[in-house]
Length: 204
Image (cartoon, rainbow, N blue to C red):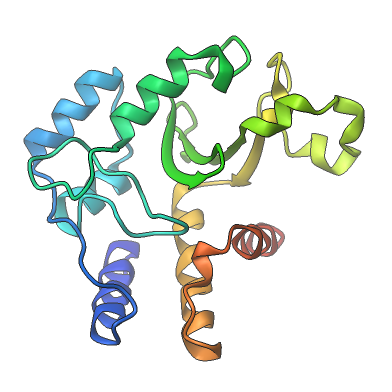
């Protein structure tokens, strides 16, 4: 079963059990192409397949993937707006937004999961703006090993979350499957627990 099929099966099952309510309709290829034109680089094929064949965002860990601007969107907040806001404001990146880093999931409290679209595997980066207030001496060697941009002036704001977009989504599916067996909670909305799931998956 492909990753797309796994996500489709999971969402169908989650709807049947009442664990999720509604999702936005899929975006059209024209809408995803328009989003690519605005951000200036292609979206990962996996994300485009999700948007065009499943739903225009709204599913995934935490609040779910941000969608592209679309007439059928359920919210005005989308990944193009997030990219333009974060990349254009030094508050969010300490003076230099990493090339082709796309905010994909807004976790709240100025924490985002971003797709590194300059990386061949589209690795996932966790951006935590509050870490800019900390000193580098506050972080141990293990933390520094997971800084994906070691030369960035605010490198402590960024942390490798998963080596690829596909592994990130697979970890979310595992987390959801565990939650349905345990207590029917959507554990992907618990940032700390989901971060542990990502770490354990990457360590395999």
